[in-house]
Image (cartoon, rainbow, N blue to C red; front, side):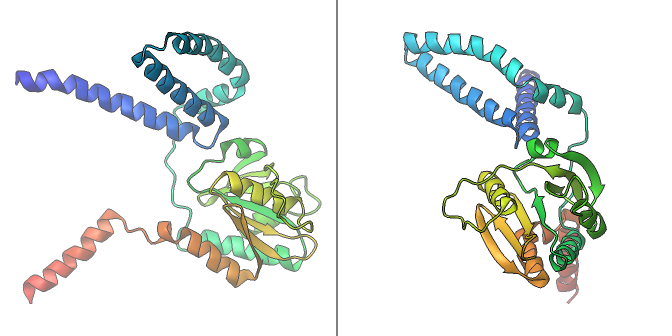
Amino acid sequence: MEFFSAIWRPIVEILLIWGLLFYLIRFFQGTRAMQVLLGLMILAALFNFAKWLDLNTVNWVLTKLFAVGVVAILIIFQPELRRALARIGQNTFRGSFLRKGGTVDELVKACDHLSRNHVGALIAIERDVGLKNYIESGIMLDAKISAELLITLFSPNTITHDGGVIVVNDRIASCGSLFPLSQNMDLARSFGTRHRAAVGLTEETDTVCVIVSEESGAIAVSVYGKLTRGLDPEGLKRVLLSLFRPSENRQTLREFISKNWKVFKEKSTS
């Protein structure tokens, strides 16, 4: 009994610290604050390494850097910290992006309509890397995705026409968002701002971007900085399903147990 009472506190403390670190990393993933957090972790590792080797000069420099860095972080990232504190307590659980192909069908339907009418569009679909900074650069919506809403957001007479739409799971998180332009010199000169913004965003994240050209009406998809052009609606649907199929085919634990229990019963009765 004394043995268990002596070890339960360290176990609980380790689990709490691990959970806190995991939550912080997930919370700041995809933001500039995440880059700062990683930088602080690297500096902390260097500080402990230098202390272990008795590198007094390096220790002194890092100590002064930490003292100044804390104040600098509070000043530079004051808006991000304020928004982060405002979000504490919100539900962070998210559903799957694909649910029986409904979201993909809505995207394809919207892109088909926009392509036939030569209306430009740029749609970014979030995957593992968060897009909080880019969501906050536009008009936040948090609306159920539909082809009609996407067509309306990209109408030439709206203020959101030239920006990008960000899709998170099966919802439109924002519209009119700004994406970084690619500096890749190998891109064709004929590519406009939409294509360069799509390539720029997918160079920095694992986002999937769908582009509709305003000039030609051509549909393209950008992933990891690469463009797939000349897609028709069926081709677009195949590309999106191939990119998101792993999350679509994932079985729940209940389905797995139910399926295998039926097989076990059939074998035992035969």
